Image (cartoon, rainbow, N blue to C red; front, side, top):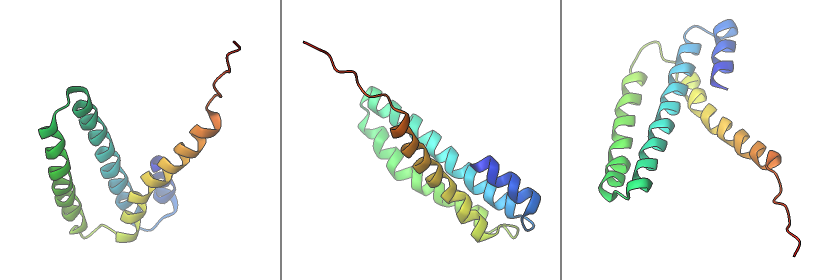
Length: 110
């Protein structure tokens, strides 16, 4: 969804809309990738201190990154927010389609 939105905005959108959209989408995608790998490590090794660090510092670092981009003169807030929302839309579409394509468990006859 991120690539499609970026390409469409690059071809038809206002100036810097594609960049605002793309930056936001990449921030959210990177956030999910790092969060997933961090939680995988927490669940594998049962590290409580690491989970606290992830919870506390994730939002602080993400806030600083977003604040840095929002202060840029070229960033358009509407397209930035739309880029952030693409991950939610993609997650919803993925969740809905996974349920439709999942195979039913076969019943065993005893």
